[in-house]
Length: 277
Image 1: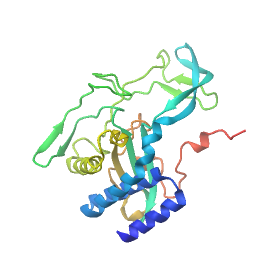
Image 2: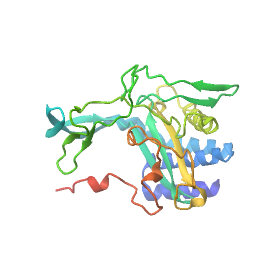
Image 3: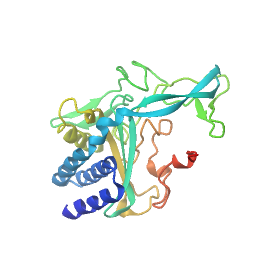
Image 4: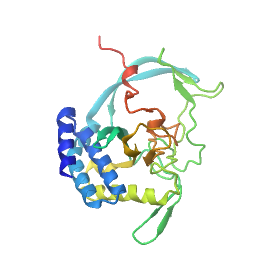
């Protein structure tokens, strides 16, 4: 544990971001928890909580977003910009830990994003089955929606910035979203679901009422056996981990579906950014 704390301290000095450290700590904590080592897991969660202060100001971020000419319902063309307030709804955190050169991949979301598909877990007394329920105030799903869910009807043309309908005759419009793998695994993965739910409860229970960090939860974490490069057969943890804000339409895969080696470029974003003038 002391060695791990030292390594993470060195990682913090090199990265310099409390948010990144926090989720690295959370991922490491889940590793300990899955190995049955509860005490170091709880201690790492405590350290992560100290680092998560950045989330308290995330709603103050602003960004410039595009406005569109929507006169053609199947082709939205950018026609300007506007300044909007941003809030974090989902995040992936990835980092190497001792013995895991392939990196540990974790994912978190806001509680109000999307409803879950049905799942089961073990409470302290009995097996509990939680049914699919879309009623409520969701960011990406109308209350009470019966689906169909997760059907992409538009794509982004990166060469023009246009939004284009994926099917002729189908207008671009919001679609209801469902978290198909609520804890990074099929809903009937009771034992794994229980561990992730327990880990979340251990952290959230330490936060005072009104703390903005209570609005977020960890879906799960995945890594490979022995730190080897992923090959499809050695991916463990919650190995069907998908975030509904980023893998909305490809749920059921996991991080290693794209990041197939331990030397791959991590970001999908940087290659799309335009250089500063």
